[in-house]
Image (cartoon, rainbow, N blue to C red; front, side, top):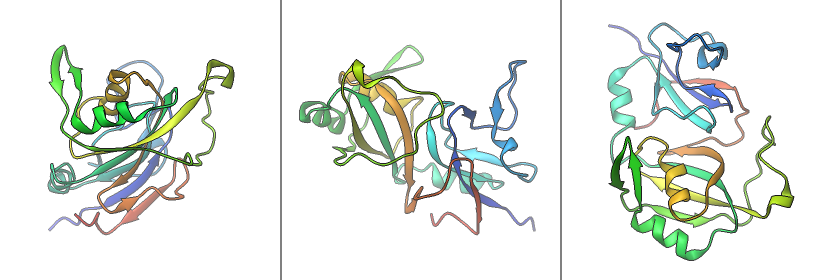
Length: 190
């Protein structure tokens, strides 16, 4: 019987959530951060510019369990402008976004403004100057995961995402895990 291995990682900015990229372009991949065993896969990818909590496993069945509809994923998004209650309510009730040129209504979710804002280390690439106006942070908790969903949701309500972190999957939090850090675990508790 094969003993599967599971990992928790803080995916840094500008890394792809995969191990092989079908392009000649030079880009950073997760395999550069740790000597993962053959067959390791990301569970629920994060796009290149999204940071935060990512699970990796060698067990396809574990991947299915983590991606199940009842498993919550929590994101903290820094948005352009001071997000208001109208926008928060719209996101909670579902908004229309586009997925590969098809309109999609997001499921209801939990959303709230984060006051005070979270304290993350500055990003390697500066987002913008304060002279461009204020920003604010929101927490969005989803049980679905469409392509760039959080970014599309905040944009749909008039507050484009500037920086995005996944901070929680089910009962596991990113906490103070440093960018690029990898922790091997027995399982993910799902």
